[in-house]
Image (cartoon, rainbow, N blue to C red; front, side):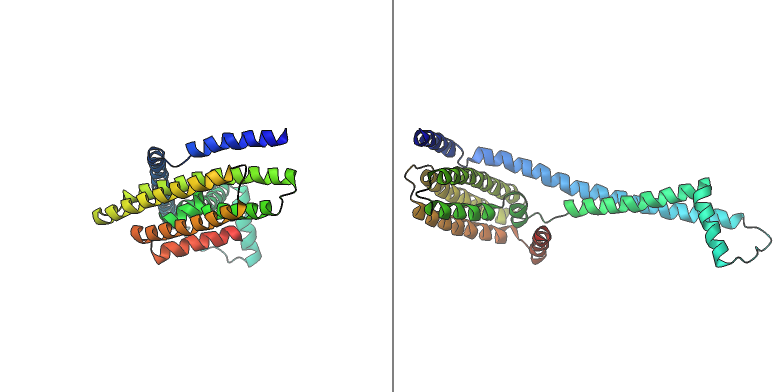
Length: 278
């Protein structure tokens, strides 16, 4: 009974996997969504920067006006010198027992909080518009592949443990489905980024994206057939996953050069990855 249930699940997933293979129409739709997201990030940073500058200008003008007003109404007779303790008491009394003091304190707190909030948002929204950044943020296929290889090795060692093997096989199927979606996202980003390249680079970028798409479909189809097979050869599957990883890395590195990724872009992504690990 359990075997028939697992077989039915595999046959169902086999059909799903073939239907989920990468299609250019779906990729184009995702590329448009990526374009919208990147545009929102870009203009959000512009807006927050303008807001921060405006707030600082307002504070500066307010302080200049307050100083000018205090100078114009200065007392004619010199004040008696106060001790440091008396000065502190007078300052605290002004801050907490006068309307002007409370107003200044609240303005200062709002200013500090706003600056920290805007700075935090800008850090989140400011990022390189590169394939390397997008992969690490939205399509970490290398992590999925690492998990798949681990699952395959476990399945090789669990030939006699039916229940554990069944659970790991289902996990492997889910990882494969995730890998398909991540490959689709990578191709979508390449499609989006190609539209921003210069005319000469755009031709090369389009060819690189098409080559990546063909490679992904070829490997994912073969891996999907093996994963969904009820007589899966796990050593063969392991070798195919490694070959797929190496081929994907080659195509992705080629696109790094096509899109013109700089050393600064690469260092920013490296620092962001380090922050996640820590």
